[in-house]
Length: 625
Ligand code: M6R
Image 1 (cartoon, helix red, strand yellow):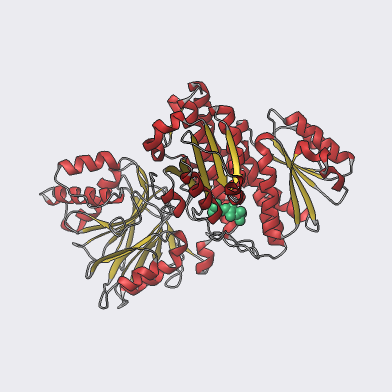
Image 2: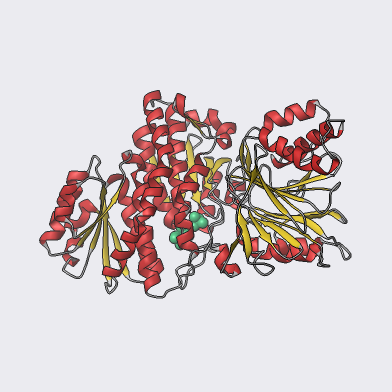
């Protein structure tokens, strides 16, 4: 297995107080409410007792922390995927050579390799594979320079060293940093990864979200990108990276811990749908060489030569991931020219599949633990195929058992109902198409077009999400409906099935996916005035065909809700309701079109008072066959 693993989610919690509280207890308790952010390894540091780290989640850490471990301040971390496997050595916080500077980090330091080389040449010794460790050594390096007669007052060297280091790193971070030389002081920084400060009475906190802070104080300050905050038990000062002071008013949060985990949203499902733009950015980060029209997939480098010779790909997956695979089939065949079949994980091994070394079996799985998908991977391996994965959960069984793969970087998906993982799977499939396509006959021009449009997706998704009140109204309008049809063609054929699946699992109404061209072969018989059809009819190569399918539905008095391209006035004359989405490349259109369907399923179920995050009879990860 060879995947390259940056880190985006994770949980950070740091505390400094002068009110007799035991920092270790505060931190360990706080980590519990951050556990939803990551659980592959955990760690804690206090200047008085040092660091304890472990693979596993908070419970493992609690077991490992010795009696008598204490402190008045400290930092703690829960990890979800970072550079390197989930081992004790790669767990956070990371330290410098002398164990003086400790860093808990969420994000990815993109220039860590060049910084590591530079620091190694200066004599720094690295113990982990983590990009975060580089930051600790970089701060140490600046501390050494500043302490060597720079004229900077002793009380200021720590913050000056941190500012200098953060100005040198490229990438994203939310960080909490502590220095043994000034044990009461904590420094926080934010660039692309959320950080909130908690302001209590003689105590201050740093966290990735307010959930661990709220039982201590409701008064918080959310940092902006480029902010660096210096905290002691009695003060907090915020700077810009340029050292300029920032005045940011605290706010009182009227949330409980669960609401805080949900970022103020009512359900994880909505929060996760709203994360779409960020998810696409994270899946793309560092993987697109736009000017050359190339995709750089580090996790596939070890098998790049074999991939050049691959003559067939079999995608195996279940549920939503299966629909992602079906979209991938269209992408890979059209743009990479490789024959693709898509199989349900649960069916693959019953087919006695004929495989050889020129076949790649590609598993798509959010959890990386779905038993049926895993069984398909094992079948592929047994028969000599190259096995690949598009997996979200780092270090999961599918990630470990496949020969190579691409991690999604979508962050943990908590709602049982999969939403953001799908967007990231589709994005990863587009990258894979570029990667394999450019190994074959795809022109640089096509590669560049795809790269450009991939980069535009986050902004277009922002737009769709900003219009979500329109979907909410639609959900209300159709609230009493018991049956829905979803239709689409070509790239949006699988999205019709996904739209139906979302609605079924969230709200338990009858919903059917149907290739729009198949309507007349049977499904049309069901259509009448109380059986609405949701039609994916964006402007693409099959627009006229789907338009005509909608006419067939309207002729049977079936109401139609269209997902259409902005500016399409014709569709508004035909459909009962239209939700517009921005124009994009046809192959990428599912990434935009599926979002209104996810929102529709969400609002429809929420208005029925259902627990959309935990649909009845379903589990997040199906680890039994
Ligand atoms: O973890 P996986 O992606 O392998 O899970 C596959 C399916 O179980 C999953 O997509 C399921 O269909 C979801 N409930 C869909 O929302």
